[in-house]
Amino acid sequence: AQTVTQSQPEMSVQEAETVTLSCTYDTSESNYYLFWYKQPPSRQMILVIRQEAYKQQNATENRFSVNFQKAAKSFSLKISDSQLGDTAMYFCAFTYSGGYQKVTFGTGTKLQVIP
Amino acid sequence: DAGVIQSPRHEVTEMGQEVTLRCKPISGHDYLFWYRQTMMRGLELLIYFNNNVPIDDSGMPEDRFSAKMPNASFSTLKIQPSEPRDSAVYFCASSPGGQGRLLGNIQYFGAGTRLSVL
Image (cartoon, rainbow over all chains, first blue to last red; front, side, top):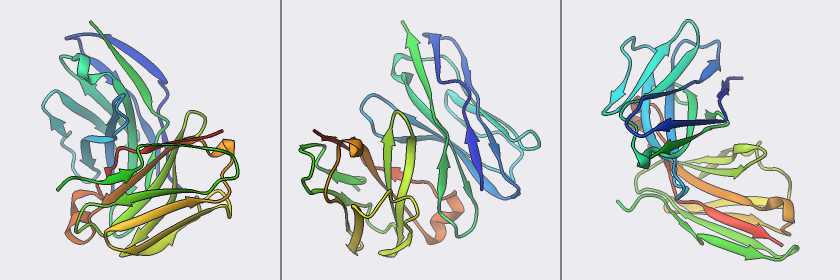
């Protein structure tokens, strides 16, 4: 079974600075998807970015980008120009491609953006 | 679309009472998931449905928990009888099947129900 590990329970960053959240995973499969979800204090889980394992190019969404290292099974999230609204829990998640729909989530990293 | 809608937003009940949580998935989504989130255990998948049929309920903690999906637009998670250790935030999420799988099985979450069992 796949596992997702987030080794940083909490992090903080100054407003406008850059921060990187780490995630590693374990799987024997070669086709899968990886995600970062954000959970602000309002509780609603929101998709931030996704990566398809067969694509070598790292995904980017505005200030959010990932560093996907397939051989190392690493999937880190970089937030540039951090904003107060980025304060949230961030969850790394994994799912196999194909028909199977179960998603495995990491334990989360609590990010605090400091004014 | 309004997104995944859960009700109630908050629920406070006494031990032994029956609790019913409700979820309306995004129209057209084939998959529906129920999760439980606690500080100790993080986000746990309880059960998921495909086209209203339960596919995997291995995460349901015990017989006190049951989930139904009578139609494509409504699902319930019931706890009977409730216990203090059931206190958590319960999320419902939906995901498109078919072509949606090409997008990587993205799940869309509701705002959750915070359950407190006294």
